[in-house]
Image (cartoon, rainbow, N blue to C red; front, side, top):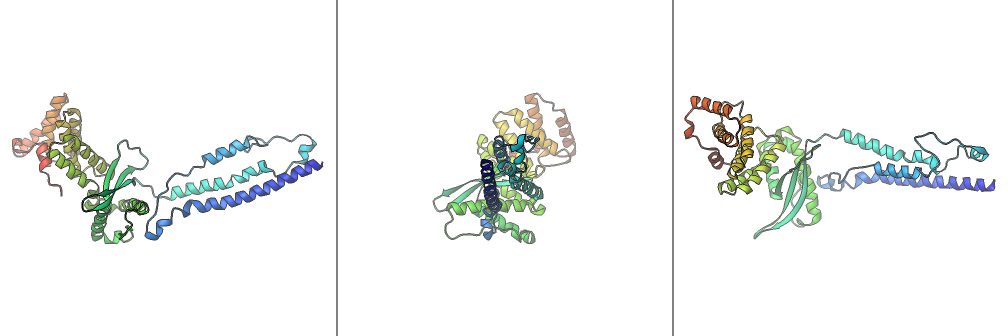
Length: 365
């Protein structure tokens, strides 16, 4: 009897100690997740979560511990037998406290689900994946590589840009001149006179640029503006055009392809810049004797031009499509019919430039 009383006393003391430890641990767990993510708010910045919250591991640990316990939370508790078992009925030991011990986990799960549900879904995410210090003869700067990621999808070939602080500052200045009211609440990292190349400054600016671009993209008028769009793909278009003019088709093809992905992520696949990008892809693939790919990009361009009666690139695309279709053995009758309609409606097609000539002569400013 004395042994049984001593045993019960030990269990009761262990239970109270466990409750105190869990209470202390619970308060720390509630304080930790948010506080460390708000350090940059003094400069108008905010950081994204560096990982995803997962409660599976905690639940699995609890389940492993319960296998050695006296009861099962989800099943029927074992029926006590004998006088000794009946004397311990209703006793609060460590195994009996585990259902309450997982209350904090369930509360955190519910809170996390509610917080996720309250967030505005983002269709496009901007992530600084790397930052490198570049030293030139007369200057030194940090080059930030930003990936454009569609939320909820896996991009096999990511769209990426590399920009320096002055590029972001120029975009900020141009947008504030045109969209003063919309830009009033958008923070931009200020210039520093020193410590521009420390890891802390680069990390803070990386997070600031991510938030800056996300905020701009959330405003429809800014998202559709030439200033915002050309910040992403104009440099690639200019570089690809120069490479095409000098006959460096393989290098130009990679740059045209990245410009294609950027415009696709930004949702501007019906613009004149996108048609020029398709022309660049078709020309480079044709020069590299990749005729099937060139034919495919011509078809894509003609589908976009389907509803347009006239366009400077319509004739060149039709002529290129007819030639490529004959080379790869595809049907070219529809393009030939459209070419005939153009002949009857306008000047002779012999006077029109080829697709490559249009690509080289197009001014990109």
